[in-house]
Each structure stands twice: as structure tokens, then as C-alpha cells.
Image 1 (spheres, rainbow, N blue to C red):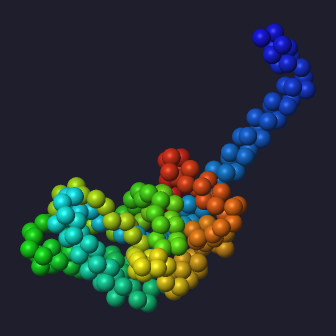
Image 2 (image 1 turned 45 degrees about the vertical axis):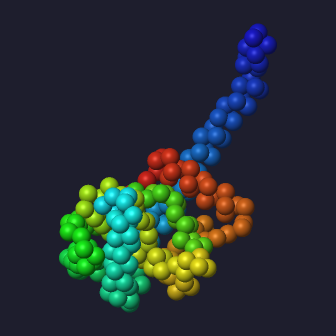
Image 3 (image 1 turned 180 degrees about the vertical axis):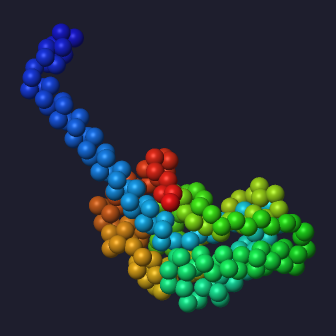
Length: 221
């Protein structure tokens, strides 16, 4: 114990410890700032879809997918010429009542009488993969669709760029969707969310996941 205390009395050891501590603080601040900026940029480039089923019963889950498919089909129609997230959101706001009616009609056609609650807002999403694109956890602008009691499993997706239209068999996102995303992100940010074997890029994505996944940053506007 005395030896340890004597080490602390050594001016060189003190200086080393102070510099090490300051270096740790500086590195942490830089990492936090980087993760916050990248997370915000990514969140500001996509508009997502969040559908909650009435329950986890097999029937309610199947209904959820029916509603999802019809909403995405309509989204694809009205946003065919959209090139930015803001254009897509404006369209959804303009036709918000139509989205609700489509969901209600789908539910009725399937023989159910559930009500539907639709909100456009900023919601928390976990890390999700869409083919060869991965989006980190965080808060994203999204169209949230609650079916009935909304106590069932979620469906998380991306309405713009249209990453929902992933070829499930190949797990590859259409090139057009990638281009839209790439046009709204920096080169490094796009590399972060794309499938990339570069260890440095993988480390940065894990860093981003750490900060967002633990609620240290939220990517809220």
C-alpha cells in the first residue's frame, strides 16, 4: 500500500495519470460527438414505418402484414417521384387520412372490426437490417400504425427510401433505393450503413450502436 502511495507522490506518475485521464475524456467527447452527428444525419435521411398488431395471435399477425402490404403499395404510388425524405413526409401528411382508410378497409375486408390509430412523429427504433443495409438504433421520423389494442409484435421498416421492398429471397436492397440513401448521406455515413467488411467501418458502426443502443444519444431532432 505504501508503495502505491509513493507512486502517487511521484510527479512523473502524477503527470502521466493526469494526461491519461485527459486523453480519455478527449477521446470520449470526440467519439460521442461523432456518433451523435452521424446518428442524426442517418435519422434525418429516412422515413420509417412502424406497424403494431392487435395481438400476437396468428390471425392478428397475418392481418398486420396485410395492412403493411397495402400501406406500402399506396406509399410507393404517391411517393414515386419523391427524391428526399421531406418530400415523402409531406406526401404522407397530405394523404394521412387515406392511409388510415386503407388500413381500415383492409381490416374490414379480412373480416375484422378493429379501429386504427395513425400518427406521424419521432419514435424509437432498434438496430435493424434491411437486406445489405443496416440502420442503427435511435429515434426516427415515422408513420406509426396501431391496429386495435396494438399489443402485438411490431413491424419495423423504411418507407423512404423504399427499403421495405427488399427481395427477401436474395436479401438485396434495390439499387435505386440505395442511391436515394447515398445521395442524402456522406460517403462515410453510407459506408457505415452498407454491408462493409472494412474493420474500421465495422468498429465505427459498433460505436454508433453503443451510444444509441444505450440511450446515451437518441438522434432526436
